[in-house]
Image (cartoon, rainbow, N blue to C red; front, side, top):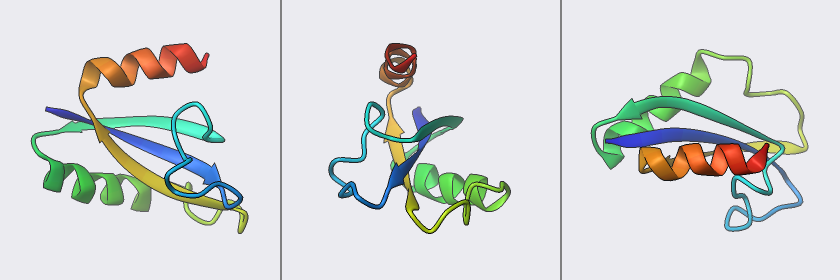
Length: 78
């Protein structure tokens, strides 16, 4: 299982620099069974929300991570 993580990052950050500790917002999405479904479900999750189009100075990145490391990173960010 993989955890879908949605990162909202400033356009001043490169995609490689967009991580949980540098993102403007981190949204923990549902879990997916494999990497392909993680990407597809992540896109569907974003499409159903008001995340897209918040600001022209932001972009969205979907990351697929093992569930335990995702929770630890989210807690560390707090």
